[in-house]
Image (tube, rainbow, N blue to C red; front, side, top):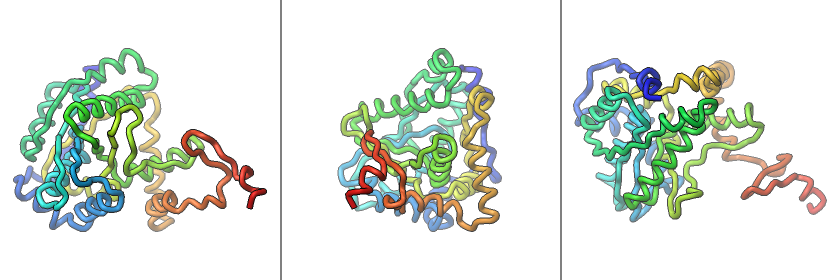
Amino acid sequence: MSNIAGEGCEILVPFTERKSLEVIEKSITTTYRKHIWAKFIKAINDYKLVEEGDKVAVAISGGKDSLLMAKLFQILHRYSKVKFELEFIVADPGYHSNIKELLIDNCRHLNIPIKIFNSGIFEVVDKIAKDYPCYMCAKMRRGALYSKAQELGCNKLALGHHFNDVIETTLLNVLYTGNFSTMMPKLKADNFENMELIRPLYYIDEMYIERFTQNSGIWPLNCACMVAAKKIGNKRYEIKALIKELKKNFNDVDKSIFRAAQNVNMDAILGWKKEGEKFSFLDFYDKE
């Protein structure tokens, strides 16, 4: 899949020339204080994502979300009263050489000390999962990141999923899989002992991540597998377009979708699943 990596990895061109590191970092706590920095801190506090003594592995893909997340963690580490450690890791799935160099250059400019390791995911996925590459790629990438994080002595792995990812996942599950479930702000790893996955961009709207990236002059990667795009038509983009259309007639519909996962009324649910076991409202109907 090496050719896929070269053709499928797009570069998001910024509106401005690349700003200095000092200007970029300052903008996070000034220009984007309300929409990025404050929401990052709120997620950290609301869900206890970072605690005393933690060692967090920050996963860097080279995209806009993970690059911003890395800077947010660096600033938090600089000023937080809570003592924790950071590692910045990159699971190279088999990037084209010029794509990999761009990733390294971005991280160098942003002063993000990354540790790159080869995962060979593109090659493996191309051999064993041509019909479902996205699922297998995501699963293998996460496993590779967990393994590296554990090897480095980390107890948490941070991924760059943002607010829009959360609501899109919720709607995808409702419309395409027939279940109501969302992307959680943190969860315990099934196959890696004492490891947690955290999502500190949970409250941050993608629009502001894009604005920050473009105004900073950063050239992030937007890595898309062309094989997968041809096979599934990319349902997430369809959901993104649907939400955009809904917002024209329903104000803050995205926020309502998000709040729905916070306000599930168990007295008005037909059924649910808990720790793998299924329940029906009838199981409790005559006991009330």
